[in-house]
Image (cartoon, rainbow, N blue to C red; front, side):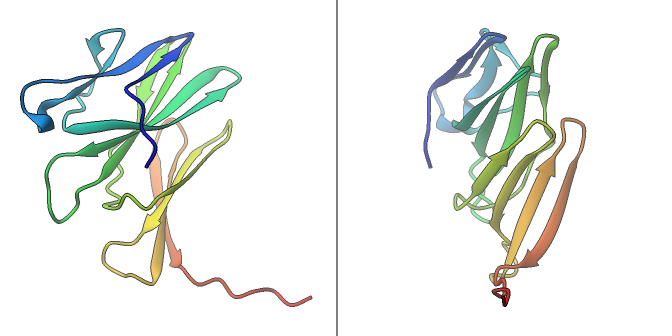
Length: 140
């Protein structure tokens, strides 16, 4: 997974404040903790520029063996920022896409290896769609 220590934007700097214990790191914007608090082994995994916002995907590892990876979308804009609800994808094998309407993360379903979970965040709410990982080719 790609990583970066901070994400400098016209709307502020998203960064990670480290503490003595690895799972105590906290996410900050302009050296102030975000609300709700995001704490754990944190990584700014992806960052995107949109016409009126900057978007980052943050991976959060709280030390769980059953589900080591969760994710949060952080959207910085002129009026402040928004943080998505936690996305418990449980995997570092992810694919992400961003457009002006929504932010999407795809990961293997942790309970069904033949399924893919697609998590969609639209800036207000999160939804998930589970589908087969095998897609039949279309005939022409």
